[in-house]
Image 1 (cartoon, rainbow, N blue to C red):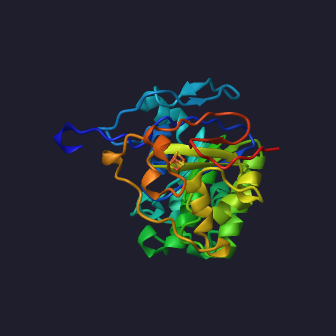
Image 2 (cartoon, helix red, strand yellow):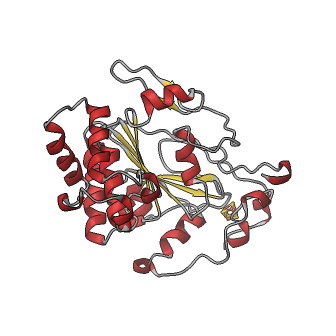
Length: 309
Ligand code: SF4
């Protein structure tokens, strides 16, 4: 940042993701979710620095790769699109503005599936159908698309390579409820077919529909990692912020979380949620650590007590 300041956009993010699993990463805007996804794809701005590792397991003839250590050539030629598909957060900006949707689907099919010749046209229509993109809009340019159509076009492109890992960054933005459900179900099918899905979303209803586990981020840290069943079910989340997110839903009380998230460049020494937390005590002046485990993990000194099945 200006003046040589550093900002930790994501800190201590530790999680795994198994084949056949969907992990929903939720939290308010600016909490670090998309930065995390960009880091995994090597798409951070040039002035960003990463430490740690992000291991993509070996599969078939492809060896394991540390995404944070891999060079740009490896990421571009063997990872993006082929081993990790991306549904981008801003689909309209992601699409090539001077090419129709059909032309972009055909190019992706040619590159990622080896399809050639007359079969490409049918394959492009099938790819569009998979993301509920209407066939009669295939010859439109990105500037002619609504937000929802651009979202569906980007989803269709992301699914083409059938990558073992899909990063979907707000994949249901701009869609009406029926299309949200359809898109979420298609992403779940993709996952059930021997792949993994990291879904970054504000849409807790979509997360509840398809996620196996939920990771909640606040101010650049994962503060809770829980099985979706207990997170959305009777027991509910353990972290006060995660409980606040659910309580803010119209169907669950519509109670907003007071205050605003802190600036990442001006975080308090202890728990970053303390100024908004109804459970805060003096103990919260020290930062709570997240302890990963097979059950729910939570970074809070006074988390809800519960035992997960
Ligand atoms: S550590 Fe303290 S301030 Fe932070 S969420 Fe838990 S109770 Fe609230």
